[in-house]
Length: 344
Image (tube, rainbow, N blue to C red; front, side, top):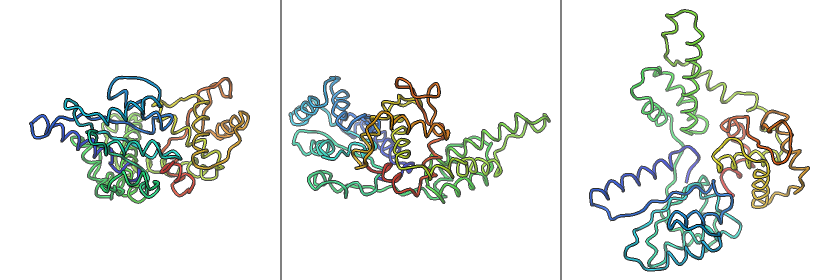
């Protein structure tokens, strides 16, 4: 577990790559690796369908898939290799009954399961939030990822830029200092570095003097401008003053966009996800079309959300106009946003 951008998934995937290399050299038995992201599931029970599909190629209902998986992991088979299952953002299968997460960690206890489950969570205290019967199945192997320090961020950014002489050393250090003092999110540091390079290129392209056009080093001034854009935009100052319902809608839109892996998503899909979030978290929202419409329009009026053709009509496509980094940064101290991002 650990905050976003602290290298959890990257670390696990690197370990899997090393394990595969050892298998190829004959020092490890064969295994199959499956990777699921719970954030992309429209409902926790969809995990059964996705897992069954990856294991056997079969497609069926969630209820039937759960039964087939129970049989699969209970049956003895000498030909079946060990399955290493990685569930990313496991927080998002935490429904009220906690039955999905219970089954997930109960299957490996079967004698013939040949199953290893690795869960990655953004919630630091996820095990403590589980009911006793689920907690008893999780085991004691727990690894906490802390936010990156300045030196770690600087080292990672330099490694990504290895072979390039376009960044001044002091500029990278400043980038690392700024990010380590706020979130410690390596993705934010890389975003700043990338934006600083864009600013540098824009200056070079607009230079009238050919000699000036040859200059292309990203300096402290470019990093400073990129940081100012990210941390001090008007939206960053305005977003904390939104209502709880508007924040819930933004969160639902971000989740649906991530699940669908595209910027624009259907309005009704966001509303469905919003209702699910509100119900799971215990928030009461009027389940009325007019209320949901007005909620979306209110965010569009302040240019946080864009609506296809500018108005609600027959399930339009909608998207966030403000960068998600800006939203997360501006609400970093917001209690509601923290709960929405780090638990279900």
